[in-house]
Amino acid sequence: MKVGILGTGDVGRALGNGFIKYGHEALMGSRSATNEKAVAWATAAGPKARVGTFADAAAFGDVILLATLWTGTKSAIDLAGGAKAFARKVVMDATNPLDFSQGMPPRLALGHTDSAGEQVQRWLPGAKVVKVYNIVGNVHMVDPQFPGGPPDMFICGNDDGAKTTVSEICRQFGWPTIDLGGIEGSRWLEPLCILWVTYGMRNNNWNHAFKLLRK
Image 1: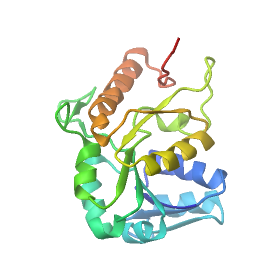
Image 2: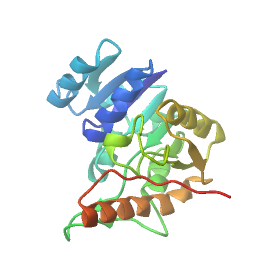
Image 3: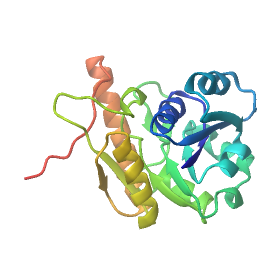
Image 4: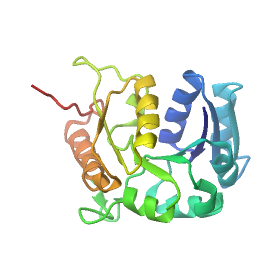
């Protein structure tokens, strides 16, 4: 599988390493094809990793990972070529609409009646957006190791085929998935990020994740 990554931060690099580890090809895009973080990542990741612009990443990937700060997401999409560049592609949306204007913990810039996932789907009406990987820290995104067994990855999106593709990627990375339905489920997943951050701050420990217990 070819994966285009928009964003050079911790999330993009962590998941990029996962794609490479499990045999996929990945191109990390940014505003500049010579971005230092992207170049360093590709050099360390090996021959299946490469770098380019946002537009290069969108053109390269059968699957696109959005791993940008929320404040830069629309700009990255526009620089990648807008809705046309993402048409018919699976888009893994790992963004959270975080507002740090009043300090920590952050608040949601969108919430409860709208969400970043829904906004991304509106920006990319021809794409198959799946909200995923927004509820855990980057250290545990690939091959999570917890005493209680693997945590669960909650996902949502409007296209069942896209969710099957994303679920298979999550499975490769060590995560069982739970499908919450349409992309409007992002209204509940994005607040889970705030819960994850709040618990981490109170305990000064970021090694936690969510698991749904069933009987």
